[in-house]
Length: 125
Image (tube, rainbow, N blue to C red; front, side, top):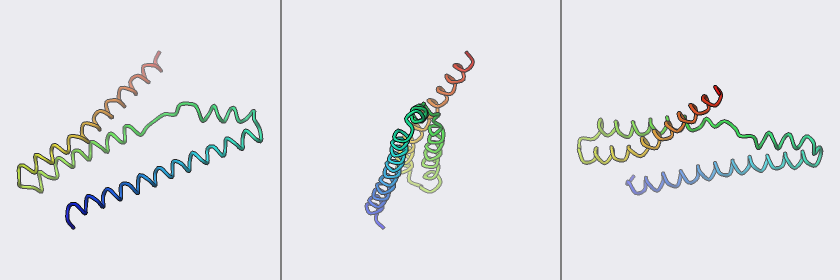
């Protein structure tokens, strides 16, 4: 399979996966809105508590996982060409490409650490 066809197939697959995820989120939002509507129609006093619970800020734990995944991808993108490719120019190109996930993952990880430290500092006060 030529490289251009492979890139097109990866792009099409990624588009389908992202579209599916967007549809799942839309379905979840639709279910939440239907639940709120039914709660407001049946018992408005309990609906206020439900809405307050839904509006309350939630803890986000996805940043640390995403950071670790991006760092692992970056390391794999940096190490695999060193093992498999003999041409120094291609290895340099692959190392340059691996910097993006490494940098983004590192920034997300540092941001997550800063948020955790701030949260612990606020709890201590």
